[in-house]
Length: 191
Image 1 (tube, one colour):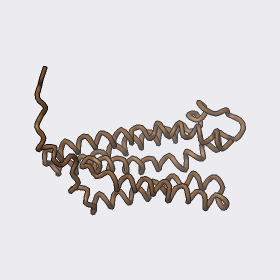
Image 2 (cartoon, helix red, strand yellow):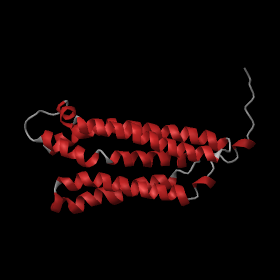
Image 3 (cartoon, rainbow, N blue to C red):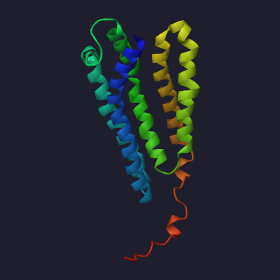
Image 4 (cartoon, one colour):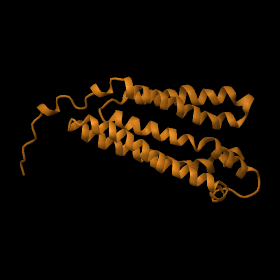
């Protein structure tokens, strides 16, 4: 029952994640172009606009699913057997935290646009493997499956705090992609 409920809830959360992930890629491109132009003011603005769009798009998808939670899950689950109620509970606990996931994706996208990829990668790995999975494992005996579902918001929140801290105080602005590329000459056209 839990596997069926999680699979159905995960199908819905994948739709919630789509705008968050797309925004992360989009702001990375915009930020990289503005970094290349030396317009750091626009990089900062890109970050804020990405976060606002995340609230509108990802948050909008979350609200839509909350309003139609039962109907959305009925596309994947039967109305009897208990999986539907568990799926609704999973959505109530986890879906809102994908807005936090989206904030993390936007800020990480901006940071990655400079070529600084290792710190965001380490933050993601630590929040998943060092926080979310152990948290669920440690608290599952006391809280049952709710420990697994609550590990999502906790992991996303810790990741967001770490990424925001790195964005504010890290050395990501000094990172450089392709040092020495400007010294390269274009290849000759032999055709």
